[in-house]
Length: 380
Ligand SMILES: Cc1cc2nc3c(=O)[nH]c(=O)nc-3n(C[C@H](O)[C@H](O)[C@H](O)COP(=O)(O)OP(=O)(O)OC[C@H]3O[C@@H](n4cnc5c(N)ncnc54)[C@H](O)[C@@H]3O)c2cc1C
Image (cartoon, rainbow, N blue to C red; front, side, top):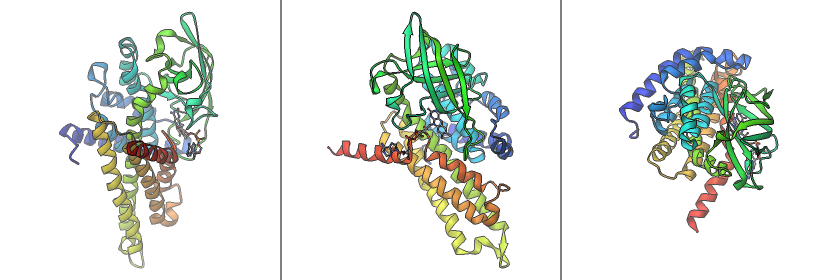
């Protein structure tokens, strides 16, 4: 693709061989026992990808949205769960602190996050508020030199193993303009990790509730400006959705490769099943959709890197990549027949993992809503 530089190609090569060695062989185990691949995460520090979008002076990788999407695709191809945890850390937390944080906050938090000493996450969703997060109920009240946070967040990626989180809470009036962001460390008084959620897919990326019981946060840990949390969140949403679409690309790629490999190996009626045109259709369509999704996703990543406003096209790219990944995972099961339905082969995991891509960072319905909203806005 024309947006790929030599650095991007090298990054892809490096991440591919890392993921083949450190993620793929362990993906099934972590899926089975719902555990996090700590080993691989620690090794991502020296690899230079834990702060992929931020400058090297903070320990980051100094790359752009295209580079970050490449890492997501390569990690997602070998273990989508690890890619999701990596995304929560490197984009939802690290990139957010870099974009919205003060110099002091960056100096204190970013080097540890980039080296892998600290694991990061982001907490916005609540039990009663997901798509309508602007109605969130977690409150932060200022008393003296501290904010006291009270409420519960849910579906938090890296909740179990995270050391610090970007947490959104209400500091003002109802609605979008009364929300602020905070950097909360797991050791702060009043912070605890709640229930661990048992999931259909992405099981190697632990998801938990986070409970704030008058959690004491120093006033200096307000991230960005007071009551500006929604605007700050909107500023980073495009890169979050673009890079999560990179995970969809990785899952779709893995499905294509699985179908190709198995279709050549498996013989029925004394010939490889890939000789049968109905089977060829499943593989051909998955490859076609992968190519189309890849063009869309890297196009918006490139335009984002150039500073363009691409909200509508990011929604379209995320939506199409997610639906393509789900269809590809489903086709992979079909091509593998009965074996595809078992846990002995990766096809069923691909489908289970892909389904999250249609929900996380904004559901398919919300993506469609954004596309139409932006079209109408542009037309009026
Ligand atoms: C594995 C996993 C990891 C996650 N990680 C994080 C994380 O790290 N941090 C975090 O803050 N959150 C995280 N989330 C939360 C995720 O972003 C939300 O699940 C998502 O935004 C949807 O919110 P909801 O689940 O409350 O669904 P709801 O908003 O209740 O939606 C339910 C259904 O209603 C539809 N719907 C809602 N509103 C509309 C509308 N206006 N128009 C049309 N349809 C609508 C939705 O599309 C959906 O089909 C994670 C979720 C999962 C499952």
